[in-house]
Length: 207
Image 1: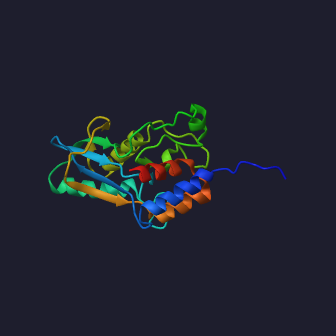
Image 2: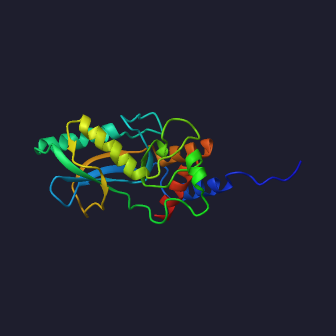
Image 3: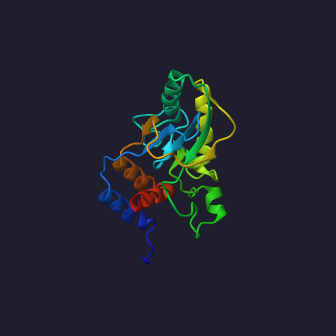
C-alpha cells in the first residue's frame, strides 16, 4: 500500500477545538432587533448557516431554525406596536476577515465544495438542494432577502432591498431562533465532511 495524505484531517482538529472551547449544548442564535432609525429592523447573524427558508424542523440539524418562525415572531411584535412597514438591515459582523480564503478558487465555490463564510445563511448558502451545488456569493444578504419574503407573507412590508448595517448596542429583541446544539453540528460536519460548516466552527472558536 502507498502512503496517502488523509483528507479533511483539519476538520478533526477544528471539531475538537470547538467542543473544547464551547459547551456542546451551545446553540447559535439568529435574532432580529430594532434598528437605530424609526421603522428599521436588523437581522443579526449568530453563526447559523443552516437556517431553513421556511419553518424550522426541531428534529433536524440543517434547517433546525427557520426563517418563517423568526418572521412570525417579528411580525407579531411589530403589529402589536402598529407597525406594518419596515426597512431591513442585516448585521453579519460576528465574523471578521475575508469570506473566501485566498486559496479558494471561484470554481470551488461555483461547484459547491465550499461557500463564502458568513454568520448566517439559508441551507448552507446552496442555490438548491444537493451535496455539491453552486452557492450564493453573499450568504448573509441572500438570507436577508429570504427573510424579507417571509415577513411579507406574515403581513409586514419591507421597503426596498435589505442592506448591511450593525445592530445598535442593547437594541430591543423582536424575535430569536436557535440552531441545533453544537454537538449535533459537529457530528454533522464530520459525518458529511462539510467544508463550509467546518469553516464556521473555526470562526466560532476564534470569536
